[in-house]
Length: 441
Image (cartoon, helix red, strand yellow):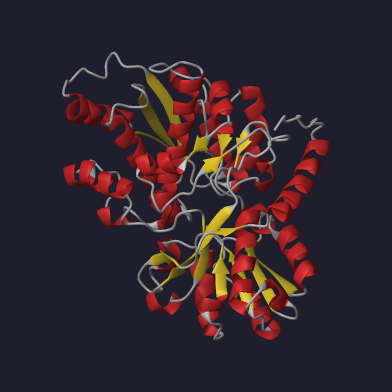
């Protein structure tokens, strides 16, 4: 099922921003296909992320587009299914002048679509999911895990636990369990955690959780038996609230559990309320934010005029809604950067030009403030070798009603994160007969 939203965007902009019914008719359009999942078992997470993306594109169109180019946005429903995601991609990649960027919004789909990126000349943007080793731009020329990958997030969690104990050296002799979604997503950070365990002398207890995660009794019996000091929870969808309920049933303190950034949203904790109070999760740059200027602008310019995408305006500012905003912002800034570098203001850009832009992004603090993303983002700067652009994250905590940031910005151990990513990308390069690029930086 496809869900076109471009006509709504066109009517909205023509009526509200340009003041002329046919003003968009002569305007150049840039096609932006969206792979979204508003149905299926992961819909509670997919819906707010999709709404955040769509609302930001509406806001940009309201303001005249990207250097005068209107964004023609269309959703394709994937149900978080890899085969359907690839089908959507294949159907949409050549429509309306062609896709110039794709966001798969699942790790499985990222693995599949990334294999096609080089031939199709369409860059793949993955915001906190997908292939973490794609941070190595020497191997993955067309894939960009902007703002952070799983390794970064997990390393910051270990640092947060260490800080809580009084220093990483105090982790010696401790037990840390990692309860993980038994999939590529869940397993990806095991190499980094094993290295951290060896570095600091803590025991790593690996506990796989079978997706979708409604049945976890045996896993939590193991946790009760092994008595870890902390748990890192790499869940997604129903797996996360189920795990928190099981933790409660065995008396494990929720404030000693640290989730990944896909296990730390309102969809995971809202129904649990105070029973999840104190539960922590690493935040992909921003967590819930109701005060940023971009949030206030969306409420005033879209929701006050009944033109917002979400059914409930209270969703605006929630964790995954904000993540959708970030994903849309990176899309827009990549298109803008490509226009300006290739002197194509007011014109469509190509996938190859957007790939260059993603590899040369420089989103400064001044630009972040101009865009209204204050307190959500830190500066992002990519390069030929670094397709991630940032090594920082924060910890967020559920207070029983809302998520909120509970730590300062923390920088992951770059050497360790890069070591894990480079080892993985080297294996990928060997398996696929890829000669890594030389980056002159």
